[in-house]
Structures are given as structure tokens and as C-alpha cells.
Image 1: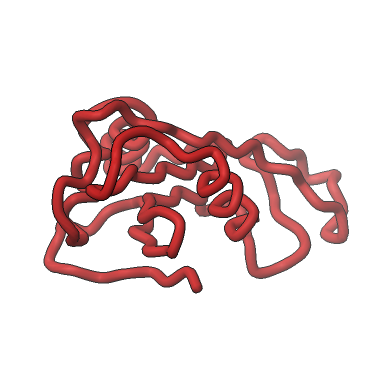
Image 2: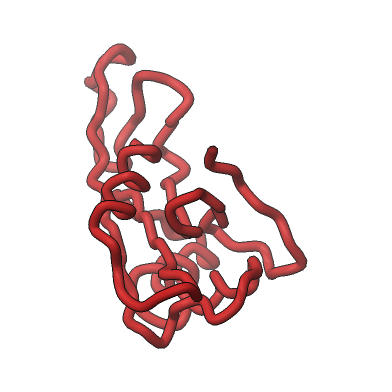
Length: 128
């Protein structure tokens, strides 16, 4: 089961999610309506029909060892904001900028090093 979490951490533009596979940050652009079968792209023209479905690119950001969770806790996900796509999404979103893609930023756990391809696939399958 995948659940959104809330904590005393600062309000992020990316959702903090707990799952049995990995905890992760998820960014979904405001223009992407995941509750319906159609979404409008930031660059889509007004000529697209409401029944058309827009495909959104998905980026999976895999961090290096310095951002791994050393202990359990929601605050560990904040380490993902140090570098890369999660950092840029968070900083630019503060200025009202949105991005034309979805990002999934899992965090490797405190129980081991590196990424397990099977767990990553399960996580991505659960989200998609």
C-alpha cells in the first residue's frame, strides 16, 4: 500500500510517499490531472479535445550514497533535495514554475547500499 505522509518537515512541492518498496518524493505538475483519463499539457493547444489523453514523461531520479536514509523517518527524504532534479523542482516551484514531466525520486534505505532493480520495478509499477 502506498500512502502520502505528513510530518513537521517544510511544505514541499513534491509529495512524500511511503511504500513497501522505497520511500520517495513524487512531483506531478499541476497541469497533469491524474484523477481523470485526460490531462492537458502545458504546451498543448486549445484545439485538443477533452477526450484526448496526453502522455507525460516520467523521470526516475536515483541518488548517490550521500542521500541514502541512515535512519527511519520522514525527515530523511529531505536529503533528496540536496542535488539533481528534486532540488531543481523544489527551488523553481517556489517561483511558480512548473515542469512538463513527472518525477519519481526514491530513497535507498538504511538497511543496505545501492539500488535493487526488482524493488525499483515494483515501485514504478505501483505508481504507474
